Image (tube, rainbow, N blue to C red; front, top):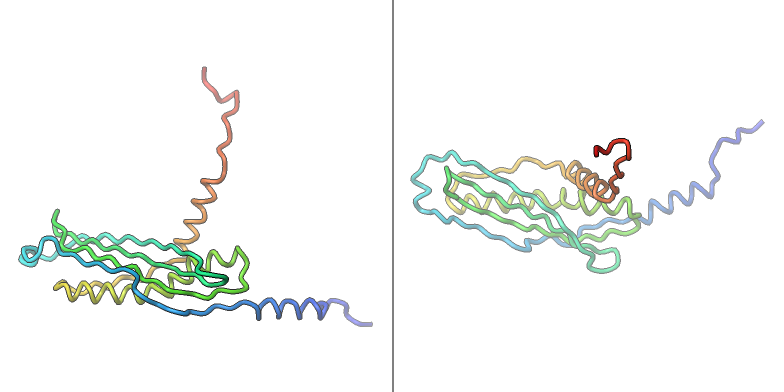
Length: 174
């Protein structure tokens, strides 16, 4: 007696073909925009260096053509000593990615999480160099969990799209 639990060979071949059709390639990495300001220098250099540091991250992307996307990771660092801004550093690290054969549910995480993960080390290095060249102690950014940030973004979008349920008549107070 033969075992009929093996998958249809045509189905296996189709799965292999689908996997082979998926392609991801990094075509270019570049700094799209960079800014470094020290509005209170040189006086800020005479103060005790105990800064408060605010870090803002954002990502955006746009299609450049069929299966080609630009993704931009924006990082803004504001360091203050007391109420004075010691420095403001902004880097928009960009990349051009060829992404082919991914469905809509896969493309979002690729562009919203995977690509920013690729770009982040380049942006971190640019920020570290700018801050050091600006005369300040080196700033090393900690790793960022872009997967969690992307999932949070998706949840917020889903909540905004879900219409609120009207109050029931019994719950209304007259």
